[in-house]
Length: 548
Image (cartoon, rainbow, N blue to C red; front, side):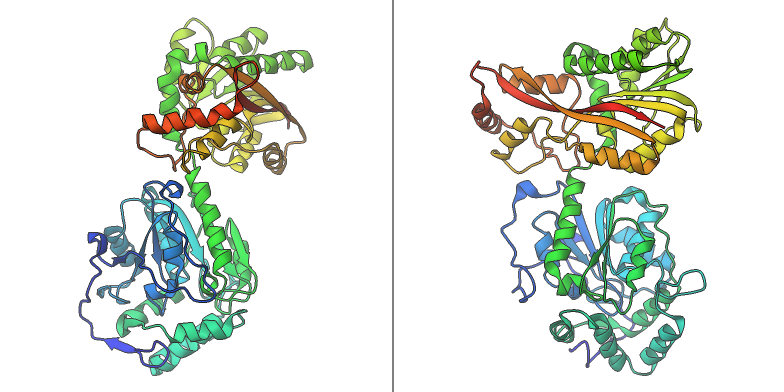
């Protein structure tokens, strides 16, 4: 059956379902011969996989799961990949109702409880609507050639003109075979690989139900989505030669990437670039912090934190000394952001006895410990997230934060929130670890496996950029190395455990680290032993004062 010439029109009956994973309408990728433009798959490395994550691929109109080509096989190196045939396409059953709500219900019943989503064109629009409806079930969203609305109107011009879309519908109604052939041409039009791509599309065996295709085409013309309310990680890919989705649509979404020379199907014509972008996104997902896990980790560490956090305390006291020496007018309100056990909160109160001092932390366990320890003080306590502060705009004269802000997930969001709550002329005084922190431990682990063991930290330049974008007028931050020494790797790991600084990334292995892997780590770290017999542990300290 040739998708461009010999369209199979199925009667309105149920279809055969893929049995893979015991999940209706889902298929895992199977090996096949790569096309000349598709990179050959390498041997999957379990250590590089995004632990316990599944990526579901959702095709667009006029196609089925074949439209992905070699992409599922390539991506299966890093995540578990399954492909989804929309109702009435490929091997998926027909629905009686093709409203957006019915399709979302169908996806909710079909997809895993939690997954990453990758959608193409209409599939991307459905994925975005699904993520907005069921945010707790979606951990990340990737779209290819996906517009906020497919058909332009007076409020949204970066889309297909309505007259063109209505002409396409009439073509579909009069001659589906000819229309689909035209659609294949539109998908390949102006692409740098147009000839090859057109041949590839015409060689596909696409099976679909006529009524289902017509219903989805109608939905494509009506569907409007908004990505502004989505807070989950996302990536949007566009071809700059796309004849169906104008490249200007990239200006309407966050984290957009443009593939030069590509049309509507960049994953087929420019697979190296698309895979590179998706791989980068998946890597970021591996290092995505699990905030509840962070809060729990520090809560459990509270009773032993102060005795283990010698480095953190030393850096914090340097910040306090700097504040005292540079502050000309005492602030009336101070927030110790990421206060932990309250160690520096009480010092801030002693330094500025006339100020209201608030200790805020994401860990309820830490706050409970701090409140009990300093129950006779005038300190105030609040459990909250630095990226979403439950504080009035302009309410803080000074924000002090020592070794806490590195646990935030989005620097831009954090910086904007800090700017919001600071008073005009207020100051942010901070210290955070930089990307070279624990470099020896990271490199030693790399010789053992490819899993995520060390938290990833933002650079000085990233901090400066985010703070500048938020509007801060003066940013005086520096980066300096600090070398701690330990007798053994075990001593270093125990210290990190006692301060709650665990590996809290989404991509961490949930398996218990066995004796053999620990032995391999110890042996690898021996390459760094100093002449004095000690083992170094590098900390990159980014610190300074930022003024509003």
